[in-house]
Image (cartoon, rainbow, N blue to C red):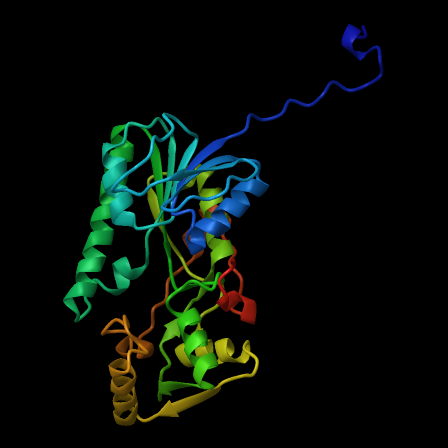
Length: 305
């Protein structure tokens, strides 16, 4: 028997999935901006936090405020994403009354790499990250929600990081960049868009609930090679100068005295010879994580307007 609804010969319209809603903290940061673009492409409706007024976009509403002075937030959403300071987010989330089944928060592999650092400030950072992760997982469990924690390695791609973009900026300005010899510690630079993909995948991954993942880039290479590829992406190409350790230390002190390297962590130079490598197998299995190799272009070191 033919259904009455089929007499026209046309198929009934497909049922559309309801639009999902997200609350995004750190949406103006380098990872957050890439995440907003991916959520928009996937059809999410997003409310994102910003300190300064911003123009709304299609499916995007900006809420002006910060953790110290939050605006009115939605009472419920389908997912919360944190792309900013993990400790501040963790304190807010532990006390929040928002109804939300999924939380995805970015931390850092510094939790592991700086846990035994010589510098007490770096050890304190690792401790804060660890405490923040525990706070989020405990709060999610207590309210029947599920949290996933993501730990990127060395982030690049938006021209706003304090590592490769800083190197590219200094080298472009002076025409050269100086490294100590044997700066051969292994690195895994990771592109912001690969991180955004992982965050979106985590929302729908049952296996990722209550877990933390290292998110390295798709290629492991020596520190020197990473810098060399960064310089090769610039035009004109700056020279890479390698100096004996004693000479490099003198040059470094002069640069710091002149304010060129203000904010450089004390252990950063020593770590140039250390391997900071993480396994992506678990992220690949649970998040279908397939990050790109490190093939930088000049636009990756220029902040988007």
